Image 1 (cartoon, rainbow, N blue to C red):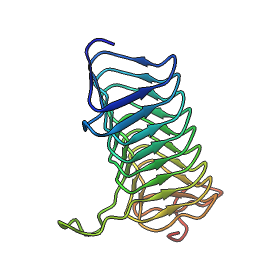
Image 2 (image 1 turned 60 degrees about the horizontal axis):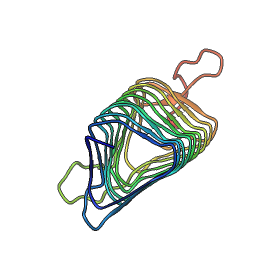
Image 3 (image 1 turned 180 degrees about the vertical axis):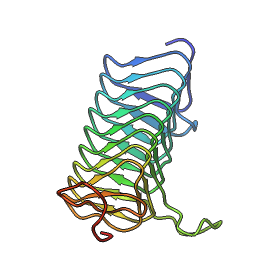
Image 4 (image 1 turned 30 degrees about the vertical axis):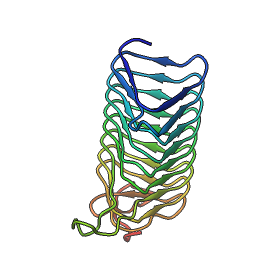
Length: 195
């Protein structure tokens, strides 16, 4: 695989396609494991101490930092940043420019739309305690939505495009707006109470 930078131990499963201009690994004493059938496009940087299941597909210019686990059959779209110490399930779709902050958990079948953002620093101060978000199975996050630190998005919940989520969202709920409010089931508008 010409034009690919490898640092440390890099284990790549069968039938993986790694395009030129990819950096795999970040430490001489680290290990990166990529499952079978992966497609990793140019510009990708994947740190050491990352374990990726089978059939990962990436867009261009993605970043996956250390201590991250990603299940099988997932998509990491163009310009996505996964900031390390993250657990991501299987069949997860992270669309273009999504940002997954450190210490977050995304369970199976989660969808994060383009430019959606998770956060982990409530007070934006140096050396503050960081707490990522927990997005449960089947939840869908719309484009440009922002989820504040430490929140839980329940199973099969929907966060509308552009919403700013300031409180936990119940399983199966739909929230919209800024701040996000439970959507009226008849109109779809965020006229309900904050979750």
